Amino acid sequence: MAKKILSCLFFFSICCYSLAQKVTEERLKSIIFDIQFSTAGDREIKKIDSIISICHQENYRDCEVFGYLKIANIYNKNNDIKKAFHYTDLIEKKNLITSETDFEAVFYFYTIRSLLHQKLGERVAALKLLDDISFQVKENPYYEYLIDWQYAGIYTEMGENKKALKAYRSAYLKAKEYRKQPGQNTAKNKNKISNSYKPAAYLAGAYQKLGKMDSAKIYIEEGLQDARSLDEVGLQYIASFYAAEYYLKTADFKKAQQNLWICKNIAVHHYKSENYQESVITDLINLYEKTGEKDSADYYSRQLLKVQSHNDAQNKIQKDILDKKKLTEEGSKTMERKTLIYLCIGLFVCLTLIFIYLFYNKKTVNKEIIPVEIPFIQDNNLFEQVIVLAKENNPEFLTRFNDYCPGFSGKLVEAAQLKSSEIRFCAYVYLNFSTKDIAAYTYTSVRTVQTKKYRIRKKLNIPNDTEIYLWFRDLMK
Image 1: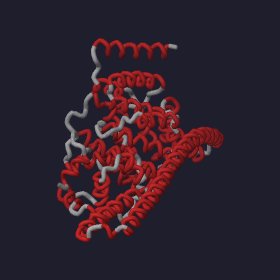
Image 2 (image 1 turned 60 degrees about the vertical axis):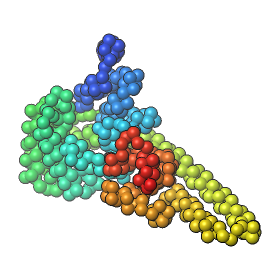
Image 3 (image 1 turned 180 degrees about the vertical axis):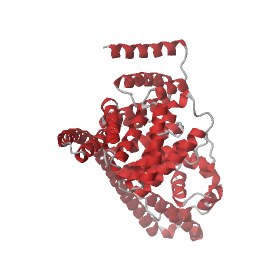
């Protein structure tokens, strides 16, 4: 009851403040970022929901995205994968991600969706989401360390330990570089800064998997020192967890138990996600088996089965939802392909009838204009071929397009050294296909097409107020 009253008072105070003095989007973002992720639960979710309502009223679209993503991440931490996906789906349903969206919001959207797919065991989908956003994070240590850290987690699950070590090492160095940047150690960035200390413990774990215990010890000690200095629950959990694994391998069972109990206490109260619960319980079983405490090992074995059973049920529900969504999308694409085939057949029939008509009436055509008409018909046929190849996503499309529009590829390479795949995408835009059409013909999502357009605009320095299709037309004049 007290929590409900406090939540109502918080929402009421925000509303009153917004009426008395219009709250800026940056201020609302700060409130969202200030909410401690490590200890957040239902009460914090209600606070964020109230902020999202205000953002929606004020048309603060970026702030809405940050709010939904924060809630999704909290639900993921609290082991409610279905609700986590629901809140990221809301961002897509409301079309909140556009070419104008703050890049930080776009980055978090891709990485959180990747994290959720990784949790379901869908590593291909998780890696693809990271690949889609990774090209935009160059020369920014904050984004670089976060994405390397996430790549490393997927490599670890795939058993590619050397790749994981390389990625964790890169994340660790980039995190240190980020902390050294001027103006970062402020109250506004408190959560970001504390998060950036975690790669040290993960790096220790990577060294342990490769049997490099001396190197692991260096980063274990650094991680534990950072945890004591910063007094942050999430950092304490990560540092203690990898310290416990280190002490298990070095047979220091007393220290291993101390650190595992710290992790277990944090997991029970704050981290209910399977990634945290199962890992701690598995290590406790390992500890008690090594120390000969069979009853304790049996107890935690039963606990592990309960956790796994609950998690499997959670993940199955969400996988079924994703599979149903995928089938719906594939069915829609199949219908579109069938429609395209019928249109092509109809077009072929029409062209055949026109050809027959012209053939039987050629005697009435002035012979002098035949040389002029033949190239026109050939160009028209070439254009139709290009369109059909584009809609089929045929590998020959770019070759035929260059025949139809000579000089197009050369001018783009001169302008920005575009790759072949980027020139191919520009050709689709030049043919005036809509974003939805390009997504359908290339079997990608609308969001991916929007991201590619954004990237092309940046590379070619196309102003935001200029229609990209008209810019390409002007290029060919």
